[in-house]
Image (tube, rainbow, N blue to C red; front, side, top):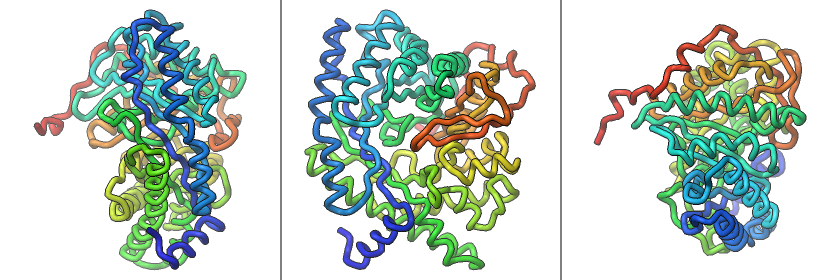
Length: 454
């Protein structure tokens, strides 16, 4: 538990430095809902979610009042739907019906997002996997709260290039289907390499098949807290800088641990993990970019950016693991463009490019995240960017992701508006040279030699 001095310090972080618990995510297994009849499957899914999660939102609100800690989002993740629907779904429309059921259940229990409209295809695709992937554009256009993810590769299996190529087309189709809303469907669609089973953050959350029937995972975030702490370390050595970040991350994670344990007790659901991710928002003072500037960069993208981000990410993880025995998910630093005002500013002045962001993903916790690109970007180009990011994850034995938004009808110089936590983003230029022949090859890229550790 927190002692009195820690409580006072935590209150200061909450009131003046944007500390919050970004999400309480209830993971729910749908494996016991599997049925060969689509109607019965949908009914079982709806009943399971609305029963298990009926008190999730009220519990989050009660904990927030009890401790005075803002809990911004209450969310649900479910077993990858490609697995759940494989027995009953014979068409894309069948899978879309499950998406609508999930959306209806999410609305009923009051959560803002439900993740797990997902497929795991790192090594190959089943017929059900392909149908679900092909249904994603319609599913995201027809629902409000569904988030979708697809795992395309891993360090152990390599990269499924057939799936990479398919997802390039699916992202472009999703952009068109939601073009009247600045292609916001793509903001709820992410592709992964080495996707974790216990990530509480959207759009990539799903409930892994090795998890319990239900589990509570908490995502806590505090970029503003870290920036404020670093202001006191200006001009100091790297040792002082690292210690400051590590100690601050420890304090932030303690808050998440407290909330996670309390939620577990109140809901009667096992505690899973605390994900300490410096996840920015468009709010002033809640920016990872500002942390990088406080470390010593004029803007993110300047020489030294990758080194500064590597330092930040590592110290955040080191501080987090000392505060909780169960740190997991994507813990570290996120670098989404649309959700971070400092990143947006760096793009607008020409300091931060897509290529530099890709380099930064080698050392951050996710990947190319919430990046708006011209709506006429070719699907093969999207696939090539995905392949590059998957390769970084595969070779470096880390999670990487891509959440690109080809904004239908807009080009470089325009701005896309997504609203809320998703923010807004300038349209970034994309390398126009072709990779068509490369991504149109079939098969998969083999796993690297260092993957053989059994």
